[in-house]
Length: 282
Image (cartoon, rainbow, N blue to C red; front, side, top):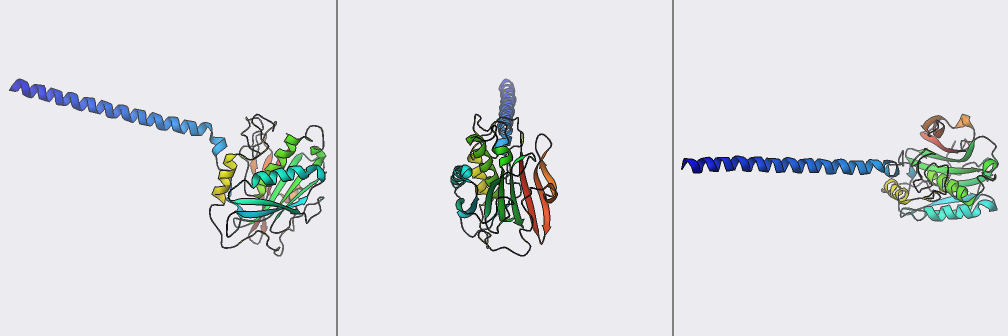
């Protein structure tokens, strides 16, 4: 009887230790899986990080919202504007519509309720393209895009790849998107919202990628009680140009990998702000 009790006790201790070891092993495996999962996410961190940056969006009462793009570009740019408009309209929450422009391309003044897209020789000032948005609270009220032919008409940049890339990125900013990455030397992410010194890739950075569309769904995932699309100008709005002059851009809010400001912000009063995105000559 004593022998049976001892054997039973020894078996119980062995059983407890075995179960404990199995539980501990399972915990280690689970932790490993979590670490591996986090590592995988981290590897793609740049590609899958949020680039809505301020949740700025066009106010609207229904989706999809149609953002008008005023055509103030010359014939050399028309096809690129058409391509970018078509690409961004793939989004399930917004469309873009090309309409006749309402501004002078030389200064590209903003028009309330829409985006004006312009090209001109703006000078050898270091930038290829500038996009600006005016916001009231979290709502975009107007936007502009300037494409600098002082560089974009030269042999290096006067190519379909560079023009698709620049046009796509600047319009993306006016929809509420930031850059996905501002390091020229990193591998291409396959999106026009990525800084690059070689937009042809591979992969090509000429068009939006899936994450851009996903981010737009996040930004425009709610509806508003008002709309800022197509609204008339309010007093004082649009008194500033779109950031071509350094003095009107405001403070640096983001820098690229070379220490140059890629996004500026300025408080222009009455609860409104002006944000200017700059893509520099690489």
